[in-house]
Amino acid sequence: MARMTPLETAQRYVDLVDAQDFAAIPVLFAPDALWRPAPPQPEVQGAAAIDAGYRALAERETPAMRVVDRRFYVDGNTVVAEFGVDTDGVGVSEVVDVFTFDAAGLIVRMSAYSRPTS
Image (cartoon, rainbow, N blue to C red; front, side):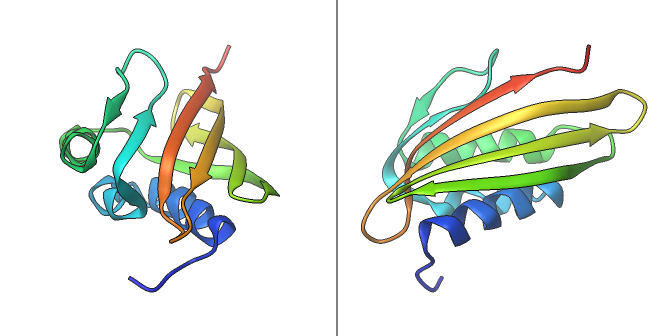
């Protein structure tokens, strides 16, 4: 994979979420990265654990969804992505993902925050 800027990597991550291509996401993380998904999923560290977490998401049957209203904010090696996840029949959940990147453009820490549809 060619080196991407932090913004490009965060945009790629959201594109993969939108496509529900969860199995393709782990390559965006550094080998010793920390992934803090939204509760109730536990945080995990390291390539093998991150890969297993995203593969579990890929294998789970999920309803049709699409990402809406994408906004990205960049400050050096930190990117904040705000977006909605529009799930058929449920509504739109608000999501904020905070990414920190290493010098190679890989995610070293990602924390996800979400608020379900009320």
